[in-house]
Length: 238
Image: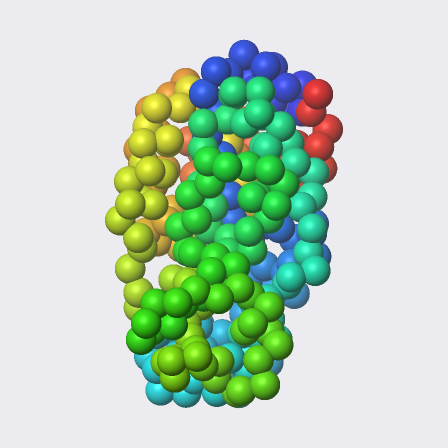
């Protein structure tokens, strides 16, 4: 019945916005952070939250890149049914924006173009000295413990680390997409990471839907809550 209710909402919607977290990509083989098997429950010399901080990147770059290459570059991952459905809706003119906390680029790989990457992307890396850009393969294949640009500057992944702020232009675009939508689908996120989770307060449309395997602070405010995998849910829709 819940799948049928979601089908009806998506059929009738004219401006759908999607807000997704790590759970959107787990069906592509990318582990999330906070589940039992996620990165936060794996053992390293330092907690992932510390490794993925600006301070750690600056002070211990070799250890940062050792972790980053090992856990943050899933270049073999492919879009799943959720990514593909969202791209299909965009081509049909129904999807006005995908707001994602993920950095894997799978929405674009599936064909989505209106994507607001709140936390950046592993597919963009830049020299901190001359601003030259590099692809993720350069980071993966570099023989240097810390990737270095041809000018000698250190290369940084264009991802938002802890202690860093979100890009204002991306946030503004996400707010516009959310505030003008008539249907918002929130999926694969615990809604505990701020300021990203705070963007939901800009939605004033008719229908708010949540797809997540675990409970979230927003459950009681949603018209429809589905406790299944995101890809299975969206992939079932016509």
